[in-house]
Length: 111
Length: 115
Image (cartoon, rainbow over all chains, first blue to last red; front, side, top):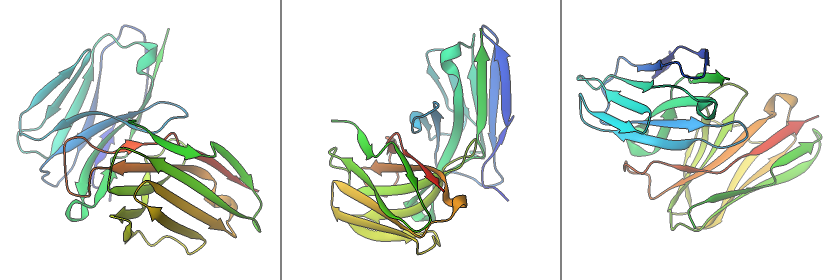
């Protein structure tokens, strides 16, 4: 059983469409982070959320941390081909020593 | 300097070869990590170094041997690998192993193919 389950696993959309990626768990987290990994590169941190109910915006990306701090969502408005990549939610486990990733969402945005 | 540099970018090795992957950062980070990533899957933690000491080994086979010569360098020595070890190997660093909002900084990885 994965600690962090993401859905959908794969998403292929047209430019201009909106989409939402979900990250769910049965555990409560003190914080959660979202990374994006482009082909041929390592993951890059997008945002950290720490407060239940928190909403953060990064240009066309909106991140929300669930009230109970068990889940999070990433919403992209008017997707562009440059948004293509693997989106990973993550949290720190192991007493603060380990960054554990969710199952991942592979997004492809086509012209 | 805000980067983690990994070399080589690509590596093809035979099952009897010995090779090393290298990782370098000059951000003053005191924790460094090796992750393994298969295609279309999330990265999986292999090793954690904190203040140049190995603090976590995620039950990685002994054919992978990490080394941290100093606070800026991290190596992964490879010997007698199997074809299923072919993957993207990512190095990462962070300020420390305790939680902080700045996350991890990842390198671009070494694409390893074992033939």
